[in-house]
Image (cartoon, chains in turn brown, blue):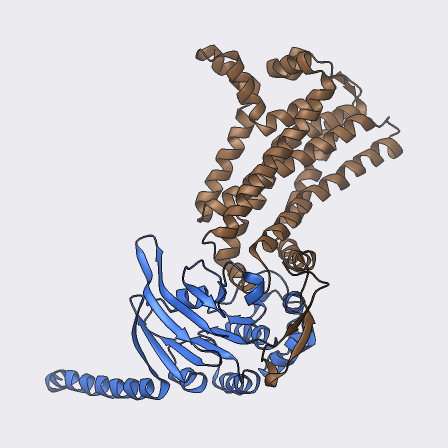
Length: 303
Length: 240
């Protein structure tokens, strides 16, 4: 790949047979250029506004209910608000991220944007990286801003103690879950050509993530003879369950809070390791999905 | 840039878009692709630009799909259908200028020559422009950069007569010495931009002839069609 520092003598004919001397763009410069266009498209599609508004509505709802003095799940006051908000996010984030990424390649193809951009001096990998950065940032940044606003409101305005440790964990878990969902969404986007089928895939993926939690699996165990190791393994391969357990790892550790799979892991690993695994697994899952999607995008018939 | 297609075949499921096509276009040649809808023109054009993977296609000896960066900066492409992106016109101009290592002013100048003052539509989303304005912008984005291969897919389909005339003048001015590959149905485009016409039919090369011979054959065919039509209408006229 040519770097920005390499000078290339360009003998292209072009305007009145002129000979131009120029430098080629670096990978970072190309990604930056395409990301600008993608960002402009995201801004105008109002997807950013919609996801931010959803976060905000959710935060307001949770704060309205949760800021009363009570003790649930080992959290009080602002801690309870954050716990409830993060729980809701564990279900909302995958849906938003899947919806925001699973149609990105299909829509770009249908709109003709891919044809125009990929005929420019940029690689498919550049385009894919730009899309990933913009979409992940669009989902993640409003979340960071909202968490910061909640802390500000509770700490400064309401005078509540801010649960910094839980806040840091919630942010890490949310970021990991966004990344896992973005990766999965991009796999759908590069595999399924038709938008209508991609939407169905999004709903199936989201429903599977929301349903294959240990509670649902234990329910299945009551109905069918499923071995316990299978239940534990299936539950933990679900990034949503891993994120949920990482979020709750610092709580009282009771069965009704963590669920059977959570208790199983807390007793064997401890809360610290469960948090680490619960954050790391969605990150690894997202990275593997992203790599598969990128490879497919670079080689397949996408335009 | 020299274009070489060696026994190129391309299928989309059961559909055969290109069927064992062998074609050489020397550097500096101006070739038009003719043929009915679905004959394989757009697939061939996209293969040359590197938009679709196609074994056997090389541009200056390089596979344009595999080695994008070596070829894409020397190829300009005007697609048949303008993209419906939500980004503003000004943003698109700046991004293409950045990728092409030219200034936005160069694109604006070409657009202005075509009758599209970009300053007036700078903040409008590209998808909100009229068909003709979008086409002018796409042509400006392609012709502003110094390139050695220009690939045009029905470039004047949405342009009015005066814009078409300016477009031909711009091509003469800016593309001297460059290789030109154009997919077109329009005789005026072919006459202005091509020296040679390759006619495709069902993904295969049906004819490869000088543009003058193609135009003459087409005119003769049209005259024949007109006379056939007159003959066919006679019984109806008699009945009336």
